[in-house]
Length: 230
View 1 (cartoon, one colour):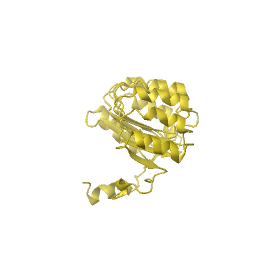
View 2 (cartoon, rainbow, N blue to C red):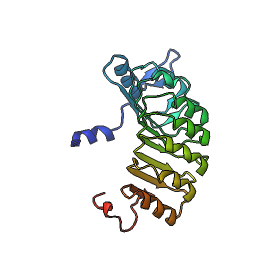
View 3 (cartoon, rainbow, N blue to C red):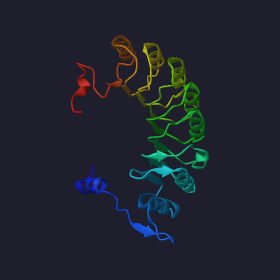
């Protein structure tokens, strides 16, 4: 259990120091990235989680030097792509927010063969990009949002035999798209925010997957006994 001091640490703002350039203009240091990258390069940590500062292409290039990295979470992406991310061959968990992950970037992510958790809430990839992601052999959690994935594109999810947790965010999935999940008995949790599915489509899905922990727009369905406690 996380004690009270953990939460105090999380919510306090990161101090930003002001330094001077040779021309006399002030610049702001980037302690969040610098400290974590230094710890990784010294073998003291295997994760980089940047919550406060935007991460640029130049920053991302430096992150790629942390070859033993297992966790990478960037909450304010200001990058144009993910070229070279395959260098982080030990990466297990990847979260990229405010990053419109396209098909090219999805193909780069598919090279991370150790990945088990992938979180891309602001993606733009199409069926082809999702198909590339669906080749990851050990993926357990997939959370993504993209308006460019069609029902037919969801068929590739059946290839993810290890997938246990799935979250669609404003993906235009209909009842037809949900049918691919009927046979995925290993699936433990499904969250759907937005989408075009109907109550009947969801009922049929839950009929086929009776043990599935299901949320629609962050809520349990009426009468769900598992709603108690959270």
